[in-house]
Image (cartoon, rainbow, N blue to C red):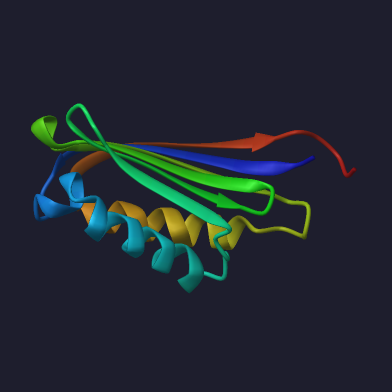
Length: 120
């Protein structure tokens, strides 16, 4: 199965603190962001962690994961979309853009990895 895996590490986030530590704010917003780019969410889970939040969205054959660290004002994001239903690169990149913008980091380290090879 071919896919696109995007990662982003966000540093010195300038967003309101609630986006880093309030599951009732971040969870619904993440679902809306995915659906806004045309990615229906099957299940989502957002829970407090030691210093922030852990969030996961399960999409068909794909996922989105976020981990925030409120004390460090940082976050890490994973967006993986399977190409099973065609090339979803624009949707993956659009969702990553929206997620990064939500946290307003001073700087980011982003990577892109093409997963798998050929068609199934």
